[in-house]
Length: 261
Ligand code: PGA
Image (cartoon, rainbow, N blue to C red; front, side, top):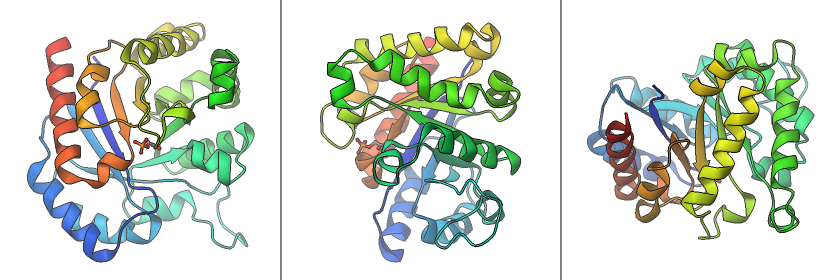
């Protein structure tokens, strides 16, 4: 059985005061269950503040929004996997479309970041997705395949996904921050294609890898997405900054996935 997973990507938002307020609300409001994993991804500078606060609290894990592919050295502005692990992160997003788009991250670079995370026992969430142009040109499958292949062609390939307890997040770029969510049936069909592709390498690993959907997920559409058999959880951006939205999405994840199991 695959546990439900809800991730909150705070992107470049917040202040010490707003982080503290949001955390208070989340800590008192999110449902706790062994069937549900929740992780939040604040900006780097607030990681220690959040880690401190989460120390005394069960049920919410910490992650970072990206990581350097290098171990250490003269890489001004970068943050290493060891540093993230050192301040209390369990997870890290790699290959988020905004990093690919604005940070020029290639598939190869994303794969290197994936490896760097693994080396420090961070669980990577590999983000993949096609742009609107690619979607309209019917290129979704080939784009996703290339993005997955970069990681699957690392030494140990598909087994890395299992060893790392890694997750894959499908986020169509045209749905991120646009209010335009993929229809649940469309998202399900892409997720099932991803799982089938993984199964062509190893069927039992494909069955166990959790696939998240992301892109304008809100409390109003999360339930329908989470009803889908191959959508194991959601990666929430904008709505994760609103405690009541995020708490409601967590409750729906628990409700839908507990009913399905
Ligand atoms: P969004 O962002 O929910 O604001 O669309 C999702 C993401 O970028 O992870």
